[in-house]
Image (spheres, rainbow, N blue to C red):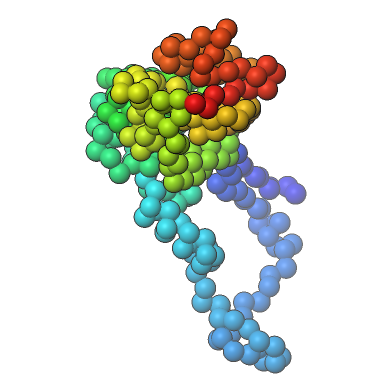
Amino acid sequence: MEGLETGITGHWGTLPGFRRSITKASKDRIPRRPVRAAEPHGRHPTGRKVRSACVDHNAGPPQRAARADYHRLMTRVLLAEDDASISEPLARALRREGYEVEVREDGPAALDAGMQGGVDLVVLDLGLPGMDGLEVARRLRSDGHTVPILILTARADEVDTVVGLDAGADDYVTKPFRLAELLARVRALLRRGAAEPQQPPATHGVRIDVESHRAWMGDEELQLTAKEFDLLRVLVRDAGRVVTRDQLMREVWDTTWWSSTKTLDMHISWLRKKLGDDAANPRYIATVRGVGFRFEKS
């Protein structure tokens, strides 16, 4: 149609609206529908039941609104990102999901907000000014904070991923990212964080305290990284049974998108060293070739 212009703008698949302009000639060809006053709640003159036209169509379904209010009261997300072109649309998307979002633009401010507690999830950029995101994650973990951390960064090399996860991150998303996938990962981390911690029974002299994120062998406390602790927790919980590689990747890294499990093998090797175990003649962690690993019962 001559004179019709349509513009669509968006970010990460978002289409905020359409812009249309129609020439006067085109408008004249469009038949006008007579405007009729809204009927009150009751019956139409024809006899059929009608509902009141006084409805706030922007309010959304009642159940959705109630669910959003619940999440807003219960779930706080700390977004540490210095690039406004990323933080602003991402914060809007998280708020639309019903989360309360706090934005910090540098490392010290992000660390201070995380240390204060009351945060249910940290979305953390690595390249923050003032303090690198890795250092923020390390300090939060060393101070005993177990809040889920999702790293958001342009560093896509495998070694960067390993370093980030080993610093205490629970998931790692590279830029550019798809918004729907990122929100799904946020929901997965929040579900896992809300689950009741399970206290594995002591076995082979190894004791684990899930809530304090600490482990002991006899009377000696083991100095474990966040991922080493999670690996030990899962293996001790299922002591005597084989835990598959896929299960460990899902439970410890909350992902199945890895092209290899070299990271898992590295962490198992480090964990064995700290337990004083020998891979050739294991006393604690046995390798079940082609399947996974088993923590031997005492």
